[in-house]
Amino acid sequence: MPAIVVLGAQWGDEGKGKATDLLATSQPIDFVVRTSGGHNAGHTIVVNGEKYATHLLPSGILTPGATSVIANGVVVSPEALFRELDGLIERGVEIGPDQLVVSANAHVIASYHVAVDKVSERFLGKNQIGTTGRGIGPAYGDKVNRVGVRVADLFDEGILRQKVEAALDVRNQVLAKVYNRRAIAVDAVVEELLSYADRLRPMVADTSLLLNNALDDGRTVLFEGAQATMLDVDHGTYPFVTSSNPVAGGVCVGAGIGPTRIDRVIGVIKAYTTRVGSGPFPTELFDDDGDKLQRIGGEIGVSTGRTRRCGWYDAVVARYASRVNGLTEFFLTKLDVLDSWERIPVCVAYEVDGVRHDEMPMTQTEFHHATPIYEFLDGWGEDISKCRSFEELPKNAQVYVQALEEMSGAPFWAVGVGPGREQTVIVHDR
Ligand code: GDP
Ligand code: IMO
Ligand code: MG
Image 1: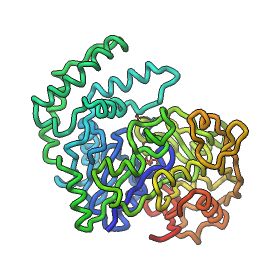
Image 2: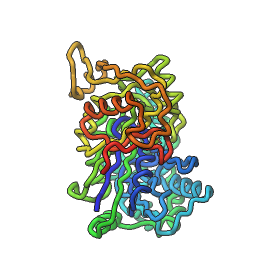
Image 3: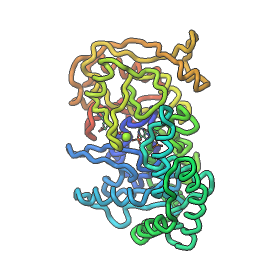
Image 4: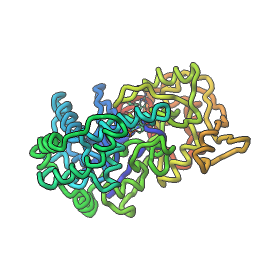
């Protein structure tokens, strides 16, 4: 039975939550797993017209019968975790005691990570990355610097204190001497983290063992990506990226499973492109079309409420995502947002300093200089939100989907025609 990966193929907010929810409700799914990032993610799921947003929790928390797993590659803010859980419980979502499992090896986001994230962004001035301010970068930085605190450390006060001391040793000097901020007290951090220990303890397990055993037993495991390929710290538009590896390879590291386990890798991609925060974006629009995409697409961040930058579909990005993730298929979302355009530009290649590039340019400087080469496809000029099969789509919408599929490097499994779970058209059944 399969291990299925769902990941973002652009700069995030492609509709991974919807794709995960759709997969989890259209077939029996035993586990839904987050393997990277933290509560910087914002995934929207619309069930029977009710809208839910998940951040740190896998979307599977809304799927009856599925166990949600926060694996070792995730950075966990216990405060955010419990705030999110309580928010769902208050809305009447039933979450059983065994329905959420957290890796003992996941790293913890503490208040000092948030403080450093915010202050270092301010310090960057016009070069700032536009992070979500959730402490993600500093927490991953501590992990790589080997001064991180892991979930299991919360259950041993002596060890926790030692680790927090080690983390704050240099950090406090930097806060005071570089950023002119007050030092953070070890006692306060230890006390705060210990306050979560009792509630967290029953949820904690060896999630690598759990997931490998599940796959051995033929159970179905869905890995729900967060962030996206172009935000990957290795393969994205560095330095305007997040601090983790949201690409398919990151799933293996972040979950403790081998690459041979994975059966399907689904890249979620919008029928146009959006980006939140700073960084290059070749097809970005600064005109009425950009405003219209933003308005019709409701392009406002789920986590930070920031307006998303909008632009046309970029097939170079799609091919790149297909390559670095080894995509078996795409899920094309938000096709309905394009209903009212007469002519739809699609970026098929870039021009960089007078040279045509069909593939992603090698260097960051070239990518910054890339201007899109467009092909123009005819629009369909009608509401497609009620279409439920590929054949029901207007002819021009079918042609648009087929043209994108041909230039994107992997088959299109399905197309989204609205935010609802049922607003989906299957192109190639699996
Ligand atoms: P994620 O971070 O990748 O899960 O995506 P977000 O939830 O941040 O943003 C995607 C937005 O698009 C959400 O508001 C979804 O409800 C919405 N959405 C997803 N698929 C479709 C679709 O096919 N059509 C429309 N109109 N909205 C969609
Ligand atoms: P989902 O899972 C869109 C962006 C931030 C910023 C950069 C670094 O909903 O697709 P960070 O706080 O991670 O250090 O910020 O990454 N970013 C996202 N953009 N969707 C997301 O998640 C994002 N998570 C981080 O805006 O540019
Ligand atoms: Mg999002």
